Each structure stands twice: as C-alpha cells, then as structure tokens.
Image (cartoon, rainbow, N blue to C red):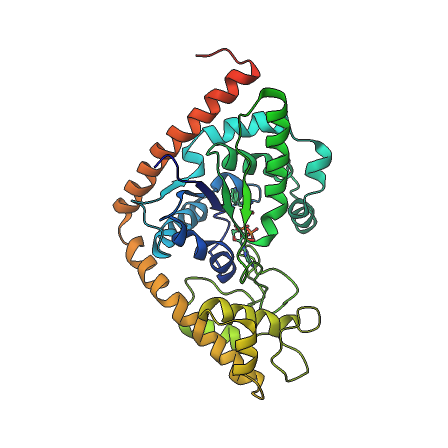
Length: 332
Ligand code: ATP
Ligand code: LTN
C-alpha cells in the first residue's frame, strides 16, 4: 500500500548473530511487517570494512538470511535482500560521501572503537561507513529504522546528511527516525558486562549465539559475571552484570523489571542465572530449529534473495535517478 510507512534495517554478516542482535533489532522486525512496508538487508558491503574470509562471509550471509526468516520475517510480506545485490547502495554512497564532512565522520563512536581495536586496518571504508549506511536508509525513503541504541548516532548523521542535501536540492530524501526497543536496546557481554555483546568479539565466552545449543546457552549464563552482593536488583551503574541479566530475562519473558525483582526477592544468583538461561533457551529453540531446516533448502533461500534484490532495486533506483538528476549528472 502506498500510504504505509517504510522501514529499513540491516545487520552485518561479520559473524554469527547474537542474542544482542536478536533482542536489540531482529525481535522488532517481524512484528512490523503488518503495519509497515519493510526492507531488511544483509549488509555484506559493510562487513568488509573488517577483513573477512570469503567462504565464511558467504556462509554467514546465507545463514543470516535463514535466521531473518526463522525469526518470523515472512519473505512474502517483507523485502529481504543482500546489500551487494543492489548496486544503487554503492552508487548513492559515493554521492553522499561528498555531502558528509570529515569532522562528522571523525566523531563517530563506532569508528573510534573499531579503529582502536583494529589498529592495523583502519581503512577508508571503515571511516566512510556512515555514508554507506545513510545510502541504505535514504534510498528507500525510510521513515523508521529499528536498531539497538549503539546505532542512534549513525541515524542522526543520516538525518544531517539528508537535511544538508535537501537544503541544496529541495525535498529529495525523507528524514528517518531511529526505533529503539525499551528493553534489550543494549545487551551486554556476559563475561564483561560493561561491553556490548558483539558478534565480532566472541572469544571470551560472554556472547550467546542464536545457533548455540541449549547446553551451551545454560553454561554461558551459569558462568555470567555478577557482583559480590547477593541482591537481584536493577542498578546499571553499580551492578552491570545483574542488570544485564534482568534486561535479558525481561526481554524474553515480557515481565517488567519490577516484577522480576519481586519474583527473585531473597533468592541467590545461582537460581536466577539458571532461570535466565532457561528463558533464553526457550526463546531461541524454535529459531534455531527453523534456521537449520531452512539452511537445508538452498534453492528456496536463493529464490528469496533473488526476488528481494529485484524488488529492492526498483525502489532504490527511483531514488538514485532523482538524485543524479538533481546534482546535474546527464541522464542515460
Ligand atoms: P559487529 O561486532 O560486527 O560490529 P554487532 O554484533 O555489534 O556487530 P551489528 O551487525 O553491528 O552487530 O548490529 C546489528 C543490529 O543489532 C544493530 O541494530 C545493533 O544496534 C543491534 N545490536 C547489536 N548488538 C547489540 C547488543 N549487544 N544489544 C542490543 N542491540 C544490539
Ligand atoms: N551500522 C549498522 C548496520 C547497518 C544498518 C544499516 C542498520 C548498516 N546499514 C541501515 C540499520 C540501517 C551496525 O553496525 N549495526
């Protein structure tokens, strides 16, 4: 329908999806397809800002597509596509990079974090990454972008770029808003609860993957770092480990933080950690099973991403043509 609002979001195939990617982003995506016109992409062009093994990148991207579907995102009601299959992303990204300032890119927290962690590969793509992300969003004239709170800064920059461009050429781009969940916006690493749970940093065992087996999930929660008190109380500043577990339990059960504090009043950390583990196991079980089933049907997955690329290209090319015309490129 033309009057439906548009949603776009994406996840990098830089590693296996985590509980963080699920609770921060994916969980919201499926619910939105009834009300919005939704585009969900696998941003492989973003993933190569850090070095990837080619065979693994292909495999991760395809698994991610199966996981999108397994999380309830129906390919008949949503447009699911792989970013590199729609060349308009690369094309608009170049244009937008000419309307994005060096100073703005230098202030991006994600760039600073990733540059500090990958001192031997601070490439130009890592730096201009936000211009590509702005292209992802603006090509579809998205109204809302469902993401975890770490992406808010990138969406604000996308708006700034769009406002700057519109200021020169008239109303070309719609201004997008971030859509950040109340619970689950920032799931922390179970071993280092002051760091975001991140799929490219799974070495310390503090990361729960969507495809982890139930026994591995239970082990990860039983080993979760807490504190030396014994009260199950939400206090982000002083009790980051317990607060993170409360958030996760809340996101998986729908219970409020207050309800959870009451439920576990007077109980020990051991009991609580096992309960959180069980809630996560039950949340992820159907997703894991459906993902494995879909991965066995490669021709179906191919038909999904082929159709997705066709549909996404039609919308994206419309915006790209308009942009080219506005900036003075000769029409083909
Ligand atoms: P990478 O480690 O490769 O940077 P990542 O694990 O941080 O990846 P992204 O691909 O950058 O994940 O993010 C995918 C989506 O999931 C984004 O919307 C992001 O905000 C959200 N997300 C990722 N990690 C978390 C988290 N720990 N808590 C909440 N949301 C998250
Ligand atoms: N930058 C995001 C991934 C991403 C994205 C997007 C998210 C790339 N393009 C468009 C939403 C909309 C990240 O690192 N998580």
